[in-house]
Image (cartoon, helix red, strand yellow):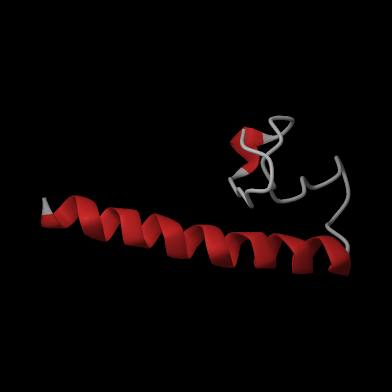
Length: 59
């Protein structure tokens, strides 16, 4: 990973240095803070995924 870059990914990238969402604790629900953090990460990640999908459809 490059220092200074803001990289985001889904939960498959946990423990790789990439910013991911927060997992739900076993047997409990997410806290309001966790839900807000996940929404923030997912909003940006989904926008990037849609852009890549659009580029792939153009090819």
